[in-house]
Length: 274
Image (cartoon, rainbow, N blue to C red; front, top):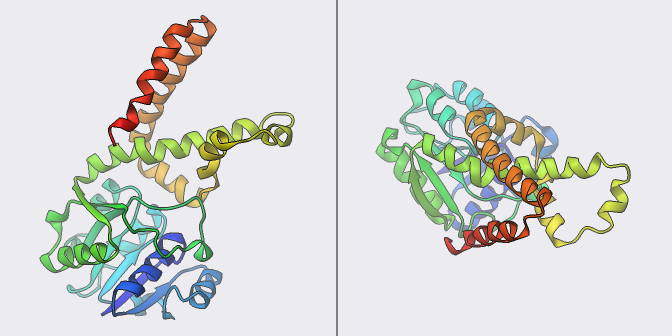
């Protein structure tokens, strides 16, 4: 079996490392960024760097690139063999599912591994990035048996927990648990940077600030695409967040600290759910 990985950054690189450990196959890679190609080969993330036309001949092709690029790349994969499995790893799913060319609908497995770090590029690749994490497979009733079974086998080899979901539902949920936190983190970072002396403020930074601002280091190329594709759901999640912010602002303005404490107490129950 030949596994092709398009996009050799954190997600694609980590995928190459992990699958090489668990699967007897040849791994080839493609990336428009030539530096990424050189680094990926040097780091052993793939066995070989190939052209786009060559990667189209693989048994399995992973798309680990920004979500807008996934949609564009799928248009260029319309002529792959009926036996080639294409697995996209995008953080949004509805538009990707909707805009997959009809010729390869059965081939394209829409997946979202709920894994990652704030780092990006081939040097950010981590062997166990996927292990023990959840992967969401969307609308697999559209996929041919060969492709569905291959995807399930590969994610099982990565030791991931597989969840099945409709793409539309996925994007609603992802807006709250992934996309909204990134928006908040970017906003928090910019709030500090806009102050007169951000360096002095950051001298006081401890665990709380570092934890909340960490994901603001994530790739703007990737996340601006995610926000664009999931615009409607992200806006809804931002409305909900703004409502909660307005509540705490008013309680502090009114010096209503009993209500504030109750509001905080409700929030502490969230982590009892999982």
